[in-house]
Length: 72
Image (cartoon, rainbow, N blue to C red; front, side):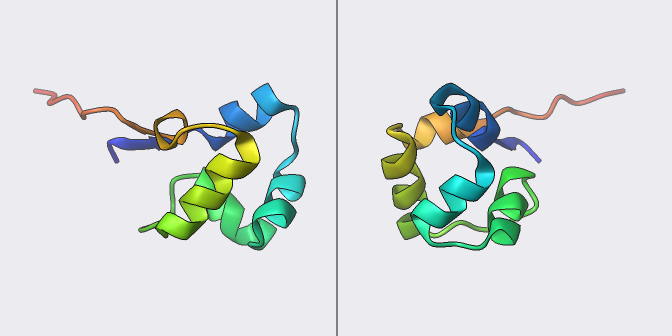
């Protein structure tokens, strides 16, 4: 999938654990894990807003578009 989720990078920069972030934004650790691994099919803007607020970052710091390359 061409959308890469960089929550782990931001967690490391902020010296915050996944559990602490999940608690701060009010979602389960399981749901945060699904989002972090890129297995989520969608993310609510309210969740994205809460993540950005908790990590003091922009949505572009968390979500990145990396086009897939065609292979022969």
